[in-house]
Amino acid sequence: MRMKRFRGEGWALLGMIWALAWPTMLEQLMSTAVQYVDAAMVGRLGAQATAAVGATTTVSWLIGSTVSALGIGFLSFIAQAYGADDRARAARTSSQAVLAVLFSGTLFTVIPLLLSRRVPVWMHAAPEIQQVASQYFAILYMPMLARAASTIFGTALRATGDSKTPMRAGLAMNLVNVVLNFLLIYESRTVRALGLSIWLPGAGMGVIGAAIASAVSYAVGGVWITCALWKHPVISPRGQRLRPDWDVLRPCLKVALPSALQRFGTSFGYVAFASMINALGTIPLAAHSIANTVESAFYIPGYGMQTAAATLIGNALGARDERLMRRLARMLVGIEMVLMVVSGGLLFIFAPGMMSLFTIDAAVIALGATVLRMVAVSEPFFGVAIILEGMLQGTGNTMAPFVFNIIGMWGVRILGTFVCTRLLHMGLVAAWACMIAHNLLLFLLLLTYCLRGRWNPLTRG
Image 1 (tube, one colour):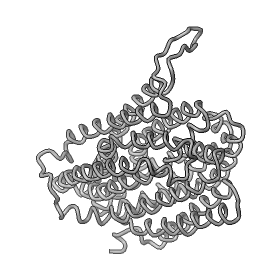
Image 2 (spheres, rainbow, N blue to C red):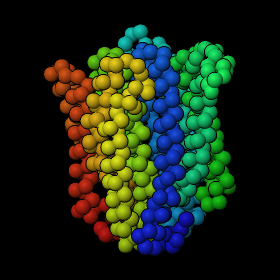
Image 3 (cartoon, rainbow, N blue to C red):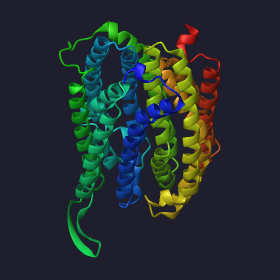
Image 4 (cartoon, helix red, strand yellow):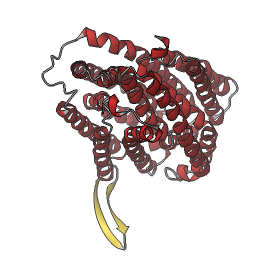
């Protein structure tokens, strides 16, 4: 897709946005569905199993979001090169993405394996679940090279307008995960379906079986997306020298570093936040873990549109088309508002039922439904913040989102949660109220920044 093909009236632009957004949404929907299946299957093992999986989730976010931040730098650079029809620069950038995968994949394999026994302790997990939580965490990071490839190479492909290939890789990965979950988590058993008795083999490995299933699926996804990148007609790294090219790396790192710091800072904030939640006890931890899983499905429209926003704004910037950038910005924000109002409404209505998919504990269901309904009201505002951040990523401006996110995370969410839970001895509801306040502040800061015209480098230049 070249920018000369992007010019058109409103319906043409809408179709273009949708063509980029829907594969990402479907990919995320399937990924979230698999998370739901994982959580539901592990949840049937009991609250302790759910807590063991949830105890290290935020540390996984910390690592995963740091790797994805590297991808943002390459997304901005490739999207602008692609929009300018500069094939040579796009291919050179792809070769540097290979180096980023090798570096980050190796680093985040070694560090988690070395620290796997300590992480559940640092996260204040209950003593009885620390060992299994440690094993679960270690297994997930054995295939980190493949996970880094899936993240960074997938971002590079999306920057060219190809969101279908990462979608297909994601679907294959999720299918492998589901099948292996059924085989590894439970003992061999006989189930009844359509009036028939069907014997299913099983390894009876519980939480560890879920971890192995996820690790194998990550490897499948990484190999798939790597092969797709090598075959790409424009950004394949074949024939490129795999050594640092600082003419490419400097601008990529200039974008990636603030994004990495943002994601590291906010993810470390999630770790601190989760640590305070973990200290509230098993029921709040289980409710928080499941509610996070449920909530993630309802952000799919937001993050699917964010990918389209970053790609299209980056392509338009590369083509130096200011008028198109403005039209895209207006349409993206409008579409996002509609999508997130619908998403938030559905979450509010179906919160108790969604919680009951993952646990039969009435206390966990009630507490989780309460916090989900709270966050549902704020979803449209957070959705706009997601889109505005995507637009800034497409222009290569990651410094403003970094500053705004750090202020919100540490000045509102973490400080507020500490005061509410540790000093005032309040519970999960108060902690989630602080999280919502953080999201609303992020919306206000990004909206003010963009309304002042500071998002568009063509206007400022």
